[in-house]
Length: 136
Image 1 (tube, rainbow, N blue to C red):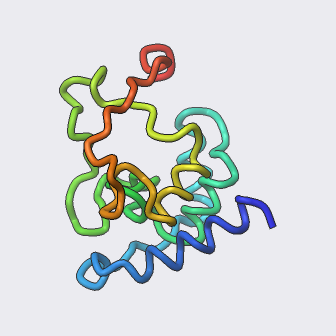
Image 2: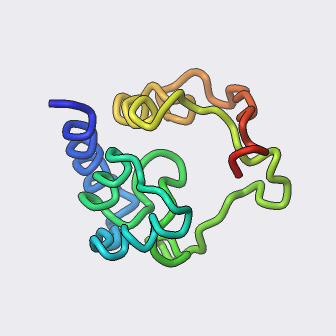
């Protein structure tokens, strides 16, 4: 099995057993049409791992920290608007957390991420994303 098969299964199990979702159930996964619509906006396909996460688990809100934003609409599963805490200062909103999505998921699942309760790196300084201005 590869990451596109293993990580969504592990992430789904963790997302569905997280106490947060007892009060706010995860939204339904997006349909194939919803994914196609989300891909049409930027004009390229989502990476296979990201597509697998959305279509297997939910339309956003699961996972580390705030989780991925919904592909469809602008509300998180708990009813809050999807947001970026540093939206008024975009140069402070984009940091390099992990080198790729698979590693970010692994560190969330095994509790080694800087934001995990078990981590001793809480508040670690993250490097700004150097491609921010060219990619956003």
